[in-house]
Length: 242
Image (tube, rainbow, N blue to C red; front, side, top):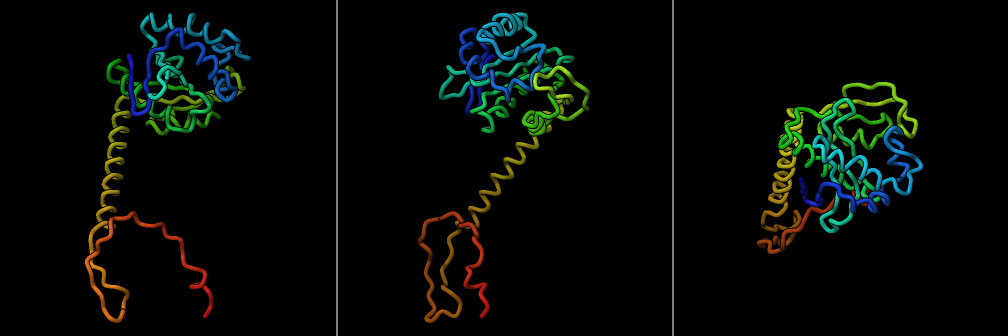
């Protein structure tokens, strides 16, 4: 199933994606938060090929796993990250990574919204259990920003980077729907606020000149609407003692 967002196209992985994965994936800041039971480090030269041939493609063929390659609309041929969704709650229902150069741009959150909608809608999940190393702050923030709740923590010894604690999160279908409703309300309120500001600052009004102006002058304003300028504080001269 292909999922689309404003900036992204998420499509099922295929064998020809191995070069992109081999180029983007083996970065310490990505790999250190993954399980040493699943990923070899240093990452071998044929790591992406084996991942696709031996893990991702067979799992997708069996029907209980979904692997999407994250691509940008302007360059749909290049995979810049991967999202894995699976039925296996014990291991965690979701895993993901995105290339370092595309982090902090909102791409992963945008992709997750599409995947969560598909999981709860088309696939019928009633909840997602998601796990991460406790010191993976980016993953933690992503969960907070997409409606997940922290259930608890437990000791861990399987992370490549040595993280000793694992966090366990849960995102239920009901919470996801509530999260989307709150997000949509906030977006609508923000849009209404912008429109209200535009009404205030762009409403035509008569110019009467400064107070005590002689002679008095009035004229209908013919200037085009301009956005309000930021307040830069009082001039230094105004703060000087008289």
